[in-house]
Image 1 (cartoon, rainbow, N blue to C red):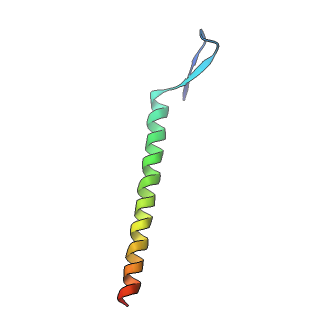
Image 2: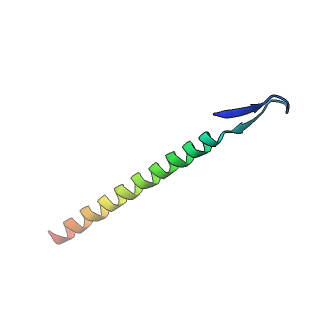
Amino acid sequence: MNYVDFKNNLHRYPKKSAIWFKKFLNENKLSETLKRSLTDVEQEQAVEVV
């Protein structure tokens, strides 16, 4: 997922698809973390009610 610049000492640059994929993975991690934290809060509230 890198572009290799053969004219510039084989310097490598990330392609747009690599940048998109990295953002996609980070967004999924964030959403999973939020889901878990909401579940933890709901469980704590259920314990307090009982």
